[in-house]
Length: 383
Ligand code: CAA
Ligand code: FAD
Image (cartoon, rainbow, N blue to C red; front, side, top):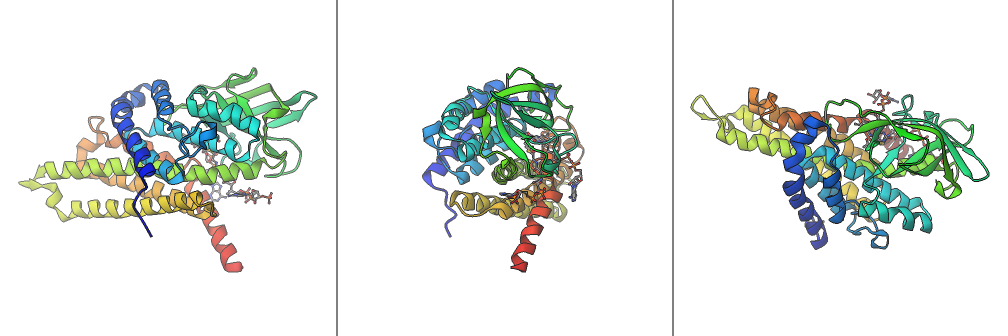
């Protein structure tokens, strides 16, 4: 077992780290306060190859693999989770088109996602009545002579205001639940497609999350991604990989919070000594360090399995479940270590805590991750 990153992995990680420090970190506070979309940062991310990290070079990616992707996302999220989630979703969209698209679709769309021509990609699965249960979706695509007409609405779509391309799931037959769902590629400027007002969220406020309304949106036959009525497994496979990204993101926020608090505890004096000398504070440091190291190992193992072409569904869910929950606790402990100062906007901890919370909800709640893991355990013990 070798825990040493390869030269490529180090290079991607360092590129992300430098970009995060130079570009994302200085903007993170204003993005959060002004709810602005980080368009210029995303354009620079594209130039550095960060919108196609695990995408073949033939389609404009840097082909660095899933482990490099995870390492990069963790570095980016240390600085700004809001920009990072847009980057994660865009990478996920590029990867799903590479995996399920035909050659024309890859050439047409993946290059534009990686180069930033599409700004970013969006992933439109959830609806108001179908979040944890996307099989309950009601958005429909009707066949016509020229292609398809999509009607319905999606909710909670990351980068809904700005994405140049959406992967959209819609029912194409009356088959119930997960069956009868197909997947389409829809340009962000398609006539009949409108984005709602960004939700006013607790955290990740520089990442606009919107509804999407589809009113008679026409797309050609070439918009169908993968096989007709096999769209649901495509969503699930994309989310398996996406969950590694969100687990990596949560880890980055947790590390940023706990490292900030550790440095603070060395400086801050009470009762005539640095608070880091108190055992109560050291235990908080010890718990966060241990739990985040465990998260790092789970995340990297899931990424490694993906890179090796092995099954990784359960491992990705375990990584996401553990990393998001323990990163939340690392942020919460960090706030406690700063006392009243941690509760103010003078320090970044309150933002980390707000930003990390949603990682236990999106790309499948913690309860859904437990369902995925639990089903797999039952399958294993029933075999
Ligand atoms: N890989 C491949 N295929 C899979 C799969 C996987 N991981 N998981 C399920 N499938 C297939 C099944 O084999 C089945 O295929 P068949 O029709 O051939 O039998 C089909 O998909 C339906 O599977 P299930 O019966 O297991 O489906 P279900 O309705 O019970 O749902 C679930 C399972 C795990 C709960 C799923 O609904 C789920 O993951 N829910 C959470 C949704 C989610 O994560 N949404 C995230 C939206 S994107 C986002 O959030 C982005 C962001 O924030 C930034
Ligand atoms: P519900 O499904 O209504 O869940 C409510 C509660 O019930 C949760 O605690 C849940 O765990 C629990 N629950 C539900 N079913 C079960 C069960 N069977 N067993 C036990 N407990 C259960 N979606 C996209 O498609 N694309 C995006 O880009 C995107 N970005 C997002 C960004 C943000 C900021 C947010 C908040 C959400 C985003 N989502 C996106 C949607 C996200 O994936 C859903 O919010 C999530 O899947 C949960 O769905 P829900 O909000 O409808 O909650």
